[in-house]
Length: 417
Image 1 (spheres, one colour):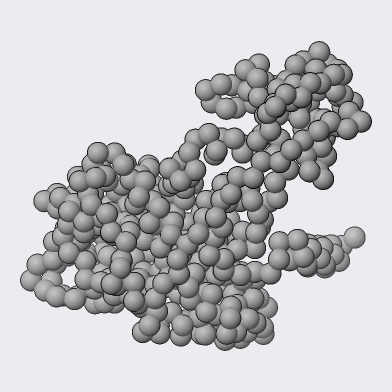
Image 2 (cartoon, helix red, strand yellow; image 1 turned 90 degrees about the vertical axis):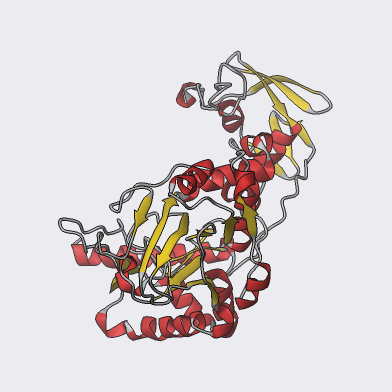
């Protein structure tokens, strides 16, 4: 088979897979999240198999996920068992069922115990597991009216180590202010971010403290106006959180911060122009960061503007930065369909009722979800000093999930199939 024929066949397979994916996970869309409800199901053993509800758990899975200290490290929760040393025909030799536990004697001589919640979690749907694994709890979409009720916490509380409410606000609204943060130097802001998680290192460095001097070749380091955008579209894994703290602004004015709820705008587009929404959900767009000498950062592949969770179909991430956009991954004679859809999204982003403007002041730290909330600013004069940093999505979501669900619940789903 020549390469052209092989490429055609692979594209056909990919189209089929996309079709199957839509059948299984439902249509692409914006979901307001799901309330976590832990419903524990009953179980029984039938013909040597464990049955939970209408689902049968394979013996190989049960043996592989034995939770005893010989098979699972107590402290690290890492598997100690060599999975492929388990006989392919592993069988339940005998069993006893207590009020809330199943005890199994296996044909390989090992003994295991499984609690009812554990067995129940093992048979949960992908959508249910996504609530815990990805923190897909309820969110609140907003527009410019959020100005009257912007989520805000106080630095004094976080200095004692509790950032849980900040993270809950970020999950729900996509951003949170932290007022009362010392601003005589950037140390307090850095301390705050490290309370949340590790600060991400990029080609700009880690924790940043800068003025508009083009020290890094990026428009963020100028004084020009910036339209609503997300950062790091040129990374395969864009930063999860971003933080800004205006430490000072002297001899000038302007520089108001712009926030737009990308999920709210996407939801609006989904309702008013489904075709445009589908185009921005499926057509990949390449991006780059090439302003600094010797550097051209590009993601390992291109991504669409709207990325969706593969388990639930929910909108998971918005990638939108026209400044960093490279190629549109369509044949050149077909790219107009993307431009038409993107123009409609851009118009929705710029609707006044979708724009929330706030003049940041020293002492107020802004932390926002870079996967959801787009940010920008108005042009300014004078000299501004800003500090802040990036935090990875997995890191902040880990702390959020522990605060929202508790370690027992989070760790209890690790073995769910």
